Length: 353
Image (tube, rainbow, N blue to C red; front, side, top):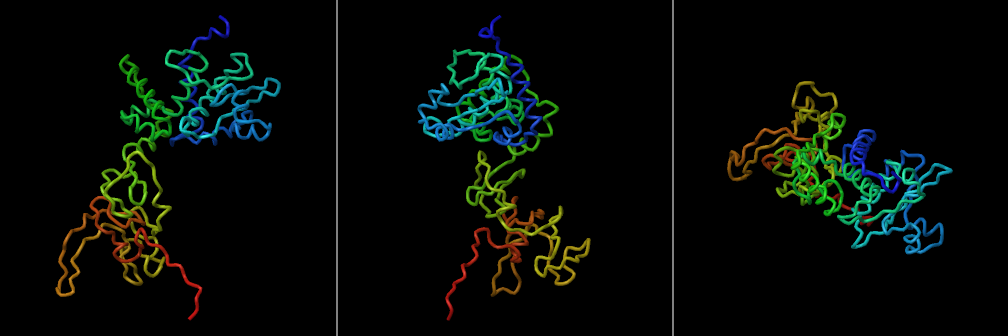
């Protein structure tokens, strides 16, 4: 059998992709593909723009030389070095998701040693038609599918929506739809997609994100909390399940607390020598636990405050302004230990009076 009669090795592409996910300890998607490239000494990644600048060529000339509008992998047999060139220009027809797939596709050629197997210096990225069965291109695509959108995770998380797959894994809707169809067709044939034991610990974090991850539409805070009803930062009740927003622990100032929501130092007087078991500061008597607070009617004409909404008793994080279960304010917010989520420090004037 000649090299042009190569048989597509789906199992090898799948196994290689799975092994690499373990080797690079991937537990978050979309994958930071460039950080992975840095771990391969004989792989150099360049953009078409960089080739244009270094060689004095136009983009069309680079495309012609690479024989692809998307990308190509070149191999120098004497130096045993590879150059992965890709078209970085984002257009209406070439969104960033396509560039991401191209990078992984060419990486598949590199990992699967297609240049050597085919006996050529350059392999160019081709957009395959459904009836096209080029063995090297098909293998690279299959590798990319199992590396960028592992079917076992998609099945484990019960992701039946191509839009959700596209959002969480950073691929185009078309790629997500093809992956979803591949999974459906395979399962009809009796193929079982189970997460390999070597990857279970890596994927537990990502599956939690898929199951519980939500981003607040108002303050863009991202949470992974089961039964989340209210944003603990701004108290919004509407969330985006397909977008990963900002980490509220780094974006919004909070108070350091232990696993019981108890401040490690007094938020009022900054006393650090606190009683080990006490919930009140032994210097200023400040309440040290951030938790769901009851809501009272503060009517100055009534001698006793009226309880409007009782506390649900939930312990909260150190920067929570509101209870994520019921929406009540937190004790830290009520006691002015935390600023409102949209507080902006006043700009001091240089004017003197």
